[in-house]
Length: 430
Ligand code: CO
Image 1: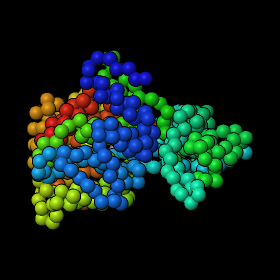
Image 2: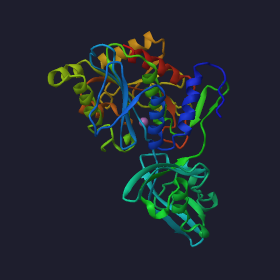
Image 3: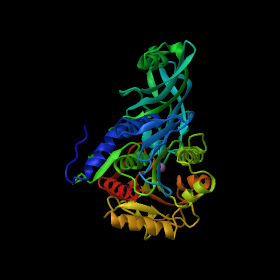
Image 4: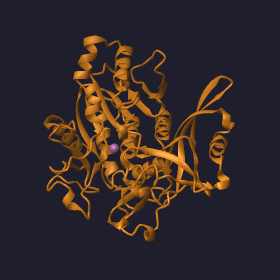
């Protein structure tokens, strides 16, 4: 259990840490968000069947079990779409098929490869386990199962400093050599698949496909003199994913169809069937409009009157390395929602969307801060422009400030989530 003291607004942060703890993979994150929506009366739709949508209704649809779009229809004739987007995936290691690998004749290791760009050194010497999904085939029927091995299972041991004297000056790691986790002694041979089969209650030969990943076992917690900080795996971007869906579920739409989108595969470029670069959002918006009797130019008028808030965690100024941040536009933890700007338009934000968002923040009494890269550091990219290349609406890139992005365990502020939540509620009820 996670204990939060102090500020009442931290209740939401506490809830989010619990959500992250039970979401070790993108599949679990999407399933837990679906559960949150169902508890609030959202009805699940299927892309393969015709949608019956009613005014005042709340719905969601999933693709690949890892991306989820939820939406609410206002009771009256809707203007356009008020959308907010985040991502369900985090950098980690993916298990290769037939994952067991002998180690020096005395050990069994697991064969993995990188998923996304993590800080490799942070994955050493900590308890890890395995989660994801498995597809079984029995009597000609394929069935998908979520898998979470809920115990400390594997470790990636460091080389002793005595064998690598210069390691504190920086080490280059080879993912095929240095980063393979230790699974057992030699008697553990063939145990991995049996363990997965036992987890889902099937025979090993029934397992036909798997997307399994290593995950960090450390649970999220509050720390700092006044518990003003949190440390947890996967804060990027499950914090924003949680706020996106929770605020959608808790807000009555005003003039707009409200949409919460959580996409998979942001960490590997979004170019998948379910990623932000896919047709998932466009298809869904067209399906909604069609079900409401708005085709062709009527749909395009809705798009013209739409907005997107892309919410993906942002870099806070580092307490030890302040020189890495912009001299002026450098957010700090608990300083409020971060608005991201980029001269080369890696972020969608422009004067219009910036002003619209800042006005929302003021209405919601939520602090905000501006972020730019240092001009000599290229920085990362995110979802916003990828989405708007497919569905061209005005939008703003925002996020929650954090430290150590893409570390196995990241650090953020205890209060910033509540601020983003308030802004999201104000936006969704417009
Ligand atoms: Co992110």
